[in-house]
Image 1 (cartoon, rainbow, N blue to C red):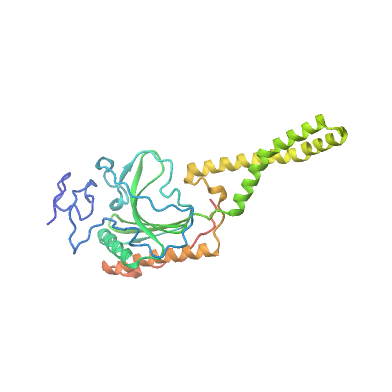
Image 2 (image 1 turned 180 degrees about the horizontal axis):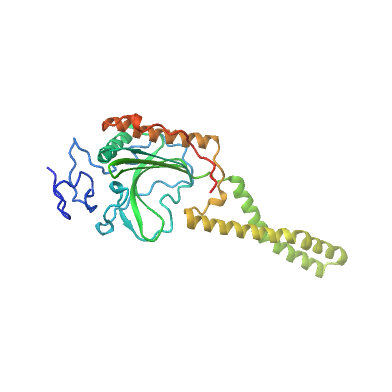
Length: 317
């Protein structure tokens, strides 16, 4: 039996965690076996298999911190999936996950009432599919700005790839969005170059100071003076250039941390063919999971045609 909404009194507030009329959180209910609740029951140990190729610079998914009831407010345009309103955030919803790649979406006419059922079906299908090496979890993402929305996403992470899946009711229609992000691998060559530049910047003054002492106390004054002048004139501009390069790299790292939460961005390189294959495979797996879930809720898969392009694309801006 459906319990009326304690906030607005609607007799049928829906089967989710929030009232579909006023957007306020509903009292927790024990889900029945025939109607599973959209609780994002993903566990890392259930949906991870044979993870042996994880990159050392990738942190495990962070746990979801539940928001308090006061953080939630009435629904907005993409109403059914909005979790609430948040205070100011300097980072975008996918900050820290790398460079944005493909972003595709589908709008299914007059099927908005299937949003809750589809989320439940996707939850179950993810559990059954067990995408190899993937960590799947729900997370409330926050937009960038002063007063911004929070929206519940599925985050599917494998290696350096992250796929964000969003399912919501848009008026009478059903909205499905999938976006991919990739964090480039850290280059060993770039690390070596930075270390050599830092050592040169620190040791050159000592070398110069030692040469000056040799000139002042040495017996071969003319020869010693020539070596000192040669080191000062030839390596001096290089020394100055190294410091400029290190400073620019530091400023770029700080900029990427403020904008993308990635302070190691100067050390990252573009994805190779293997990385592209991993990204495309995960994109196709997530998309196919949603399409298979459509059959479960009685929606034809033809209404959600496969995307035409996969993988990272060159971006103009």
